[in-house]
Structures are given as C-alpha cells and as structure tokens.
Image 1 (tube, rainbow, N blue to C red):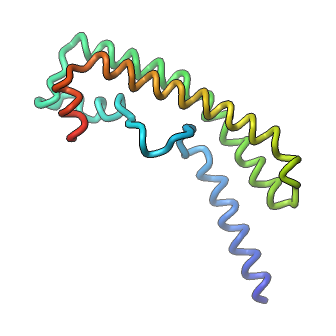
Image 2 (spheres, one colour):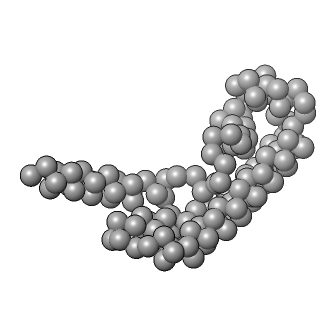
Length: 137
C-alpha cells in the first residue's frame, strides 16, 4: 500500500511538473538578471521614471524583438524538458539523455544571450537616474 501511494504521489508531481514546464523562464541564470522591459512596462506612466515618447518607442521595439526571439526558444525547450523527465522516470541511462540535455542547454544559452542583449539595450535607452528609479521600484 505504501509503495502504491508513493508511486501515485510521484506520478502526480511528475505530471504537475509537465504542466509547469511551459511556464518556466527559458534562461540559464534565473532570478539574478532583471527583466527590465517587463519592469518598464509595469511602470510605463510612472512619474518618477518619467519616460519620454522616444524612450517609449525604443523600449517597445526592444521588448518586441526580445519576445519574438525568446518565445520560440521557450516553446522548443518545454517539450524537450518533458521528454528528459519522462525518460528519466522510464529508466533511461544518463548517457542516453546527453544529446537532449545538450540541445536544451544550447537553447537556454541562446535565450540567455537574448535576455542579456535586452538588458543592455534597455540600459542604453534609460538615463542613469531612470535606471536608479527602476532598480528601486
């Protein structure tokens, strides 16, 4: 009975992980690199941030380019991660998963590079004062 309950719990956790795979950010470095265009978007009309129209135009362009690059990568990563998880539970050897893991890593590297470029471009559009305001919001 205990083994069946444990197996059922593992399966529930496994399949709930599947559902969350497409919701996870596709980056290598999590929680340490700011999502600046998202922060800017959330504070678009903040008087303290004081974005001008030219900045808004540039920032929208940066966000659009970034999302257009990251979303297809994210859509490729999620099913690969699910496949690895599934194969782990079915008893695959680590050596059998290397090519999938390398594929995921390459896609995450690409997504992280896009993210870094986004942050850099956003920093170039904002003044030092605006960057300080954004960091404190």
